[in-house]
Image (cartoon, rainbow, N blue to C red):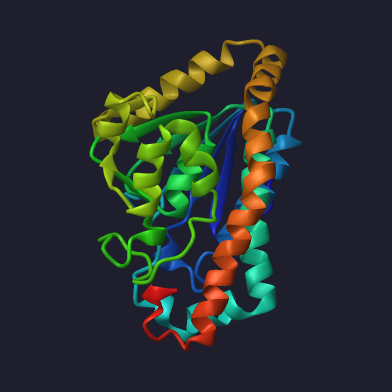
Length: 269
């Protein structure tokens, strides 16, 4: 039996677990709980020997969108980003999430049912197979400067939630830098055309495509599939060990700089 979470839902149907990200707009404390709970959820699923495949998806027609830019200038955001307990939960939570996803001996299928922005983009690239609605935008909004319509802060911060660690594994260095440094926006169809993700499909075909991949994965021997992921993911685990702590630390420093500047004209930081 999985525990109840506040920021995500975990359901298990036979050998398949589905982790559903609750829309951040419904969360009263930003994403601190989500970062922490996803790490815990994937850790628990790692220990569940009945589960063989995990599907990660979102709700309300979105995989994951950040809060509106006004939220990032609010006292609510300041309260958990500047408070040591909140910062610990946020940044340690995202590290635990990526470590748990990379180490989990079960394939994780990203079922991208809508925009995957910021941390959502990082989560997509943390998965093993990626299927997305063809018009779903993917963008890392950390350096978007308020130009990303789906949300995110109006100031620039380090993409320390996994983007700077994982995106360069999927794209050439120049393309990865454009994606991260300029918040370049691409649709799932464009990413699939360039073989950066596995599939981009019409919305009414998303369920069927994911179900087909899951069924095919379940036909493979469990031990062989688990060990194959472990071998393939060794370089990813090494990459996370080398870079994720630094990215998270730099992003946390950015927020502390903003607090010291009283959030006035932080774009120059």
